[in-house]
Length: 302
Image 1 (cartoon, rainbow, N blue to C red):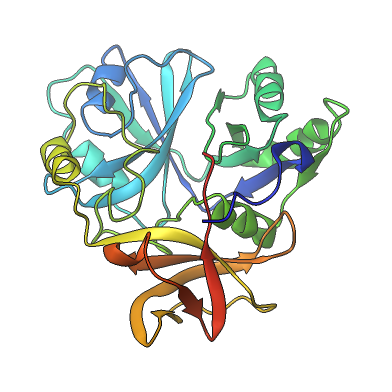
Image 2 (image 1 turned 120 degrees about the vertical axis):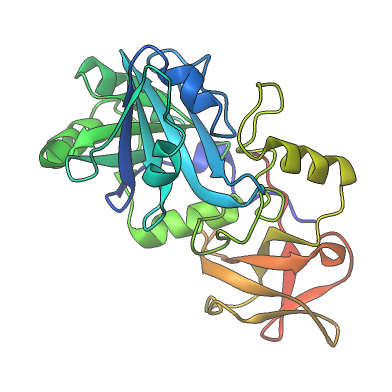
């Protein structure tokens, strides 16, 4: 396997606006314990300024949505992947708890920060009374900020000059290159509601193995104990100038062992990187190629 692409110190902090994400707000005395029983990340121990990346699952362990939780004073802000029934799935389990769940997607949007200055910038946003939390999705440092849509431009302008360090706004292409090279799959692109956390290679990134029970936990634990997933998502570096399109076969010799799910030019080094769904046997063994070009497995640091 090759080493992860690019040193951490060489990266500017990237600010990515993600207006497509749903925004749910949970309030009430039981907000933490209630939500904690429905998602894979540890929510009950979050204090204001802290956050978590996780998943909502069905009872069968299939993924409903990925999500981010940002803790604020008296409230939890939860992001949901676009087009998912996350609100309705959570609402169905709100029965006797002293908690309130509302959708405020039209009011708020999300800024995701990736890089060494993310934590400082998130704290700067909190000082402006914006819900914000440290969440490191890539291993390079990260933070999520929940901001009213009308205030996005003003906040971004302030963050760009807040630390004196390298901070830039990111395009869709920038974020795609970053997330793929760091092995961060995207719901609806690289995996979907047919997958469980192990299929999506998220069982160590989005699942807490020390928290209490949550919906779908039994299935996830059984899968982990068996240790034999049929398929996995993996980042590959491909010796090609043009990123291959989604659905391009990944070959091991003359045998197709997977397909490309997303691709981009990496943000560090300008290399072509792809995320591919591979048969389990191809994750570690055999030479791989994509569209006739050699493909190397990328070792992720995060």
